[in-house]
Image (tube, rainbow, N blue to C red):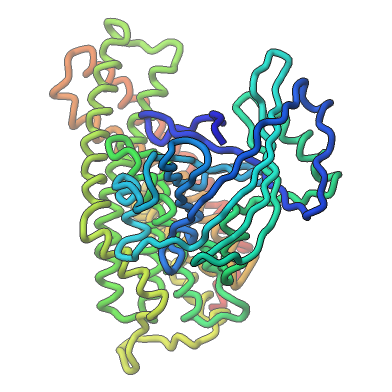
Length: 526
């Protein structure tokens, strides 16, 4: 649709369009209800004949990450337009996607698109997986001042592949502008009462389902009564999916990758590295060593940007305070923020290089290959555990190992642990959380309770670690700052030291909440 439906910022640079729409499945005899009382102006727009060729790998790697790539004709440039849609956070009632487009013929995707998809696609060829011809009837909804609020599209879609029709279906789309969010509810209710069924699936799902069975993207949940091998396979697949879920976003603006995607990709790398350590006795040790080494490297590159983001956020918080006691006004703070921003750009460039590095792409291949050829330990490998052991028996033992490691770290730290000891506790809490989350699909509530307790401990200790890292950075840059900026650095450092003391005081109570019988009793018999 040609309307500007809102904007979402990928980094701190130019925003990308955010497509927000509600979809409804309807039958051939469905009649659009009267919407005259929903908007002050309801106008019939000229119909359109649209053609879209959806492109993916033979294994549907793009769809596996909820990404669609298509070449469209019928509106816009004469040669057509390439459209890339990425999933965006939403409330579940609408299909929210980041939409990017490039004019050009359908011979091959533009080079920028190929570069953005390098991590997801890698060596696989891109090919047309479905051709959609859409006969679209349109209504425009506007307010009393003529401001566009929404477009309602009644689409009759014919699916083709290799020049042959595979069937057709009808779908209603309601796409709202940034001024029209309030219409989604009333229009949706009116359509539902008329017999339309709400849906959040793109057209590609219906199209490909007519051609072949389409799996749920990113579904790495082990089946009923899984074996240990089944669980570890699911964890590897889930880890790869989480990494790829943010891969494209890290490439969209190499100079300014979005902080949320940096953080989530880092968590994915660390979670997967922890999982491979936990389940390493089931797997080929050489395969595990290589994967964990590469994940550690990736986590460090992502971690440098994440640490810079935490620092930038702290300095922004200082700027928002109403009464900072700073000499010379805010000049020192402006300088300090500039130094922090420059540091962020420097480590972001290192990340941009890393995601195009052969080592990173080979890591993705390494993980992807494990989904079809599980790297289990060879028979007779010392310390190996059979992969066909029931997960319900093996998982409590592994989670108990993580629990005991955290408990030992806390005991070793005593009543006045050092920053280094608290950091070690944070690592152990994180490993316990990941282990319990791995067990949750199989063991249910006891594992979920332990995972949540570990997450609370990890969160507090993570905040404490951030104060330590911020003070260390401020001390490292202070010698090169002007007088006002150095003073500001001192103010921020003092604030962080005070915050660290508060978190230390809170840790004892937090640990008492974690070290409760209902959190650990299911592990004590393992």
